[in-house]
Image 1: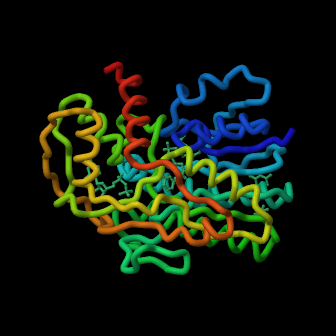
Image 2: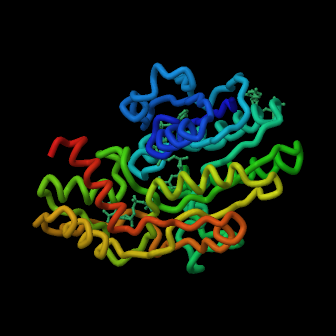
Length: 312
Ligand code: NAD
Ligand code: UDP
Ligand code: UDP
């Protein structure tokens, strides 16, 4: 049985990945420091012989024996990654060094959960992998953006210098069950506000766009990429190219929840990207991957999840 390490395995994407790997017959070592991850996300897996949980901070070296490494450890929501920005950069950079050192010693494949944030506030639209981005190096988002950019640099240098088999995945906004209700990201905020009859908080004029990918589609792409031949290192964009403004998203959430919450306009956070949409040509041609779940269907699943969690 293949032993797979998932760092950040108790988080939103990590816990969905653990489930999907176990379903496919892999055994899983989940490593997490529980900064944003929740025990409830993996509670149903505890006690299984093919699942092991280790409380550990990836800033520290890790000596384990595994066959594959998925490196997801890092807070992803702006609210969380800005809470302790120094820790965020350390997690991305030192975490990458340690996990790459582990992959090098073991001679195993390692996948990095990178992000569309490496493109910053882009001037090229949609964003393709050869675009170098437009990132502020000293702003409130930089700990995340630059940390992830440096991690990508480390991945490619370990590949060139040490022959480590890398897979660098640039993930665009993803949503679905197991997002934290207080995560601060737009989909969880809007759904929770709509369910609780509170005002929907629109930052800025709400005309900025994002492209939202449902978690099941993303995880399928992640495992497919890991399984692809060694030569395909990436970076590869993964996301859903259907683009929506935050006003359109708010309308859709209100309709699905059947809520009469009012819209409340708040200041736009600094360096908030105006437009974001992935060019997924590489993922679709080289990995035969395309997202299948429409926003409406994914939102319905996510609303049910939040109703359950919030007991509404
Ligand atoms: P999340 O906050 O739910 O999960 C992150 C997990 O990493 C949590 O379980 C947290 O406790 C753990 N973690 C944080 N710092 C750690 C450390 N130093 N040591 C060990 N564990 C640590 O976020 P998510 O949405 O599941 O994101 C997972 C990964 O995917 C992140 O690397 C994120 O940057 C990337 N990503 C996510 C999205 C998205 O839309 N969800 C988009 C782009 C990239
Ligand atoms: N490392 C780790 N687990 C291992 C092997 C290495 O955590 O099984 C860490 C190690 O502590 C080091 C980092 O990975 O800090 C980078 O390792 P590498 O071998 O590239 O560098 P070096 O040890 O030569 O600094
Ligand atoms: N946003 C919003 N209201 C909220 C939370 C976020 O209008 O309650 C906006 C935010 O300013 C951004 C977009 O929604 O333009 C996506 O924000 P999120 O934090 O989900 O992700 P990211 O900015 O990292 O793409």
